[in-house]
Image 1 (cartoon, rainbow, N blue to C red):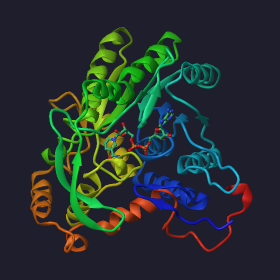
Image 2 (tube, protein in one colour):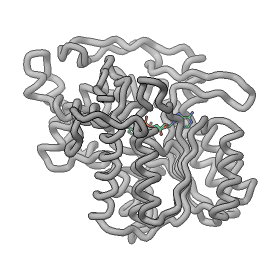
Image 3 (cartoon, protein in one colour):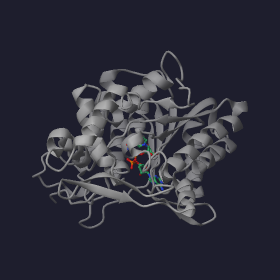
Image 4 (tube, rainbow, N blue to C red):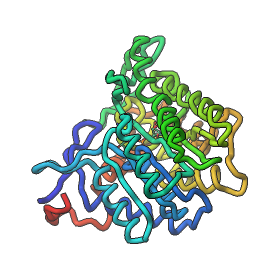
Amino acid sequence: MIVEPKVKGFICTTAHPLGCSKNVEKQIKYVKNNGAINGAKKVLVIGASTGYGLASRIVTAFGMGAATIGVAFEREASGKRTATPGFYNTRAFDEAAKKEGLYAKSFNGDAFSVDMKQQVIETIKQDLGKVDLIVYSLAAPRRTTPDGVNHISVLKTRGCEFTQKNWNLRDDSISEATIPMATEEETEETIKVMGGEDWIDWIDALTAADVVEDNAVTIAYSYIGPKLTYPIYHEGTIGMAKQHLANSAVAITKKQEAKGIKAYVSVNKALVTQASAAIPVVPLYLSVLYKVMKEKGVHEGCIEQIYRLFSDKVYGENGVVVEPDGMLHVDDWEMREDVQNEVMDIWKKIDSDNLMELADTEGYWNDFYQMFGFKVDGVNYQAEVPDELI
Ligand code: NAI
């Protein structure tokens, strides 16, 4: 069948298998061109199929020669419906790793479940013995806790509602979006889903089963961003969950002191991924940020961010580079004063008439389509995709 993009707002309901595969190939190439990192050897990535998690798996496998186990929750194809991009990315990753003689095992299922943790532990025991790096990169809208209760996260403000410029992705107009205020219960629910509780559960389960090396490292990803987005992100419901994640890093390190296992939060750059495209206001900020960072030659995608994280801030010559706030930062270029000043100048001026000129909307859409395997160089989108690849 011929696979075409079907975009609805911030989501695309189809994915192109060959485009996704090409994306993975390009990321692998980037890592190989940038040279080997003397880092982890046996790695577990939770949330390994797209965005930052996929990049982490690619950097550790192809940059460090590590054996990797990946966990993700993706939908397979059914009938005329394609699979989700993460499904195709994982398949492409597994094939590339196999070709290279690298161990790779991928699980498709709910990382929040006790059962998935058990399956992963059994596999580590059988195939790897122990792991020395655990990356926690889940972005999920809901979580079922081990007691069977469903929790749903919301992207809302706290204290009062928030009105800010917003890019209407359907008609390329700029209007204002008002983000409603969360109840205390909604904040608690978001913390349950996107906070560090499940990260702690993973580390507890893995260490109890004795499948983590002494002095191993575990890293989870976070975002802070500029004051402009504080009400919706850093000080909103998701920000509270990220605060919980940061506190969880401290708690894990303390609990694992005897084994020397250290937990870190890495604050990464804002990028177009399935998780970030869904947040109001953020797509406009992203397209302005892209414009400024590209003009200054400091724009990075997931793979560049994660390569820099591991090569410079985790396994570099200075060891783990912890900033005064206790976290690792690869959002340093995004948060540079000159970058943020220009972003804010543009923000004040931007409207429906000058959007195309002042923001990198093309870059935003390219990243968006590419996430689903479309608009990728070297793929013939007019060609039928064989059934066995769907
Ligand atoms: P993403 O949507 O590209 O990836 C999420 C991953 O989680 C996928 O592999 C997906 O399959 C997996 N997943 C979701 N629910 C699951 C479940 N129940 N069981 C197993 N796997 C599940 O998201 P992205 O953007 O890469 O986010 C990863 C982390 O990075 C998040 O913590 C996010 O907050 C953080 N981050 C994202 C930034 C951005 O701009 N995109 C910036 C800084 C941090």
